[in-house]
Image (cartoon, rainbow, N blue to C red):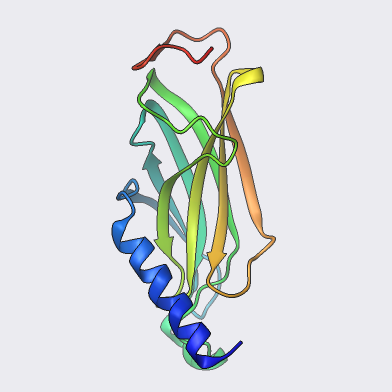
Length: 166
């Protein structure tokens, strides 16, 4: 890939990021030290901004300064993550994307520019279930590391802002 192509791709990615709707904010609710270098596993609570009553807990690896100095690769955290979403109150669903590509709920940088941790919500109409997928996105190389969780709506009292999808 030429330098010009890389520059254009970076500019396009930054423009898309600047115009995208702001994703949900996370609140760190836990932190577990995993080694003597100061590396931690952090646990964030993320509330779906368009689905009231659902909270996701996302874990990710947070590298310490000592580990960054020791191993190089100063600006990047690994793509390892996990997610669990549950009903934490009455469910009220706003104007969500019903396509099979879903909608980004949360994004957090895992590197200075190149890599993000994302949570994407997909509605499985046939099974009346919300699916939440945690994955990383990189500008040049994707990652196969992912985690998935579901929130079944069957048997629950659910309020749909625009009416239940038919």
